[in-house]
Length: 110
Length: 113
Image (tube, rainbow over all chains, first blue to last red; front, side, top):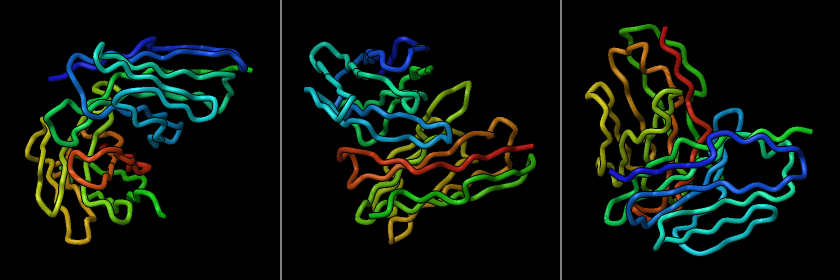
């Protein structure tokens, strides 16, 4: 099956710093989503981005489908950005089954 | 519009018991998927339902089952609970099978003692 790798696994930032999270996938996809898992476990949708670039406030994401990777940018990080960020994909030609990466655990300190 | 609702939020069971978890999708969404999250295995797909039919199944034993009702609400059942079934169970809904964004509920945290 498709492999999804995220890097770095852990990241510690000071408030105000910028960061880039990466997601590599091993096959073509027709769905790619970025999520933020809050401390209570809920997965919050950040972006649906099978290709192209999107921005939402301090967050932006880019997926280069032909090269099989996606990047999540967090600018001017805040303590509320702490948590685990997951990339999840649906391989082309399949239904809705999301395959998740192992996540990037982000800690933003004062 | 209300989000995906999962009940109960927390459950404690003992080995050998069975458990039923419930998921109400976003209004108008017809596809419901279930995922298990554990520290060791991460997030893994259990199954997907659409129009009361299971459309896709992950690599889990037959003790894990589910169903979907005509109003798109879904339940999943785990029989003969094992310690390793302790996990966060997450439900996601989407408009259609293979159609775009999946939205997740807050999850049910199951502890098996």
